[in-house]
Image 1 (cartoon, helix red, strand yellow):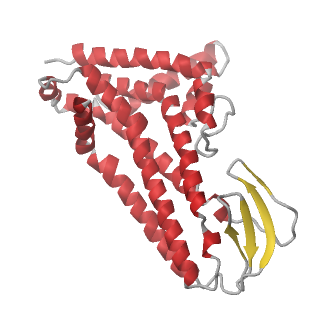
Image 2: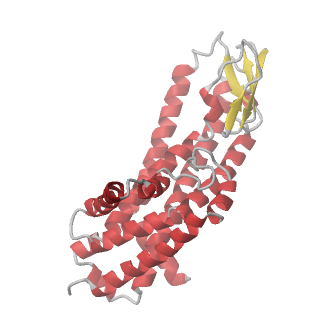
Image 3: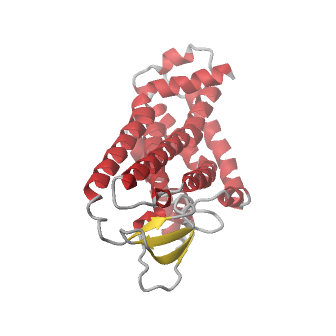
Length: 316
């Protein structure tokens, strides 16, 4: 266990800029933009109507600047929107505010993971630092599995923490903001249970996404281990060739649909993006799908090939 933790620390140290600094910079930008928007928008709500969030993304009430309730809107989480007919009710971007940080940081996390996976096994062969690491008492299996763990769980975990931190900041900021505006309902602006409920819901989605993406992660690692130059072309061209061959020979699109399900992070049951429609039910949908278990077998094969290449292909 200690050796594994040391490996994790090594990856965080070697890729600190991408794994740690980038999420912190993104979080700082979101915080600054929120503060600027709050300062600039403080005068906009004076003598106007706006919709405030109530019980954790479930109910919304339209209030005027004097605090009088005007209408009621019912919102079914982020799985759909149903409004009770009311001519004064208006939809508001605030209905999805607790979810937006998780969606944004998820996309950032997978971009970071893509760059990390493409470079992590390619760079040490390019600069020959692989010779140094081969002298350490760490097997290639440990090395490859650590990088898989980093991409599948550590990077999404960092994104989840950053998004949760932003929501906590937003809760505090909007409460303070309301005290200095004409709004006297700070508890309606962003309920604490919205922060907790959304964080818990997206934790399930992040986990489901991580295990669903294992075949794609292992494929990128294999590309990183075998590419002589320009790993991105090694990643894209074989997949594109398979798609074109299938369409030319069979006239079907099965391979492109499978690839698309990973790129779009589509739930194998609901066929919808697991991050846009969050929830722990995605974990069950993934684990109970045939494609996941076939993909897990493919993952084992790809990781085995990656380790074999690391142990036998490198020219000493």
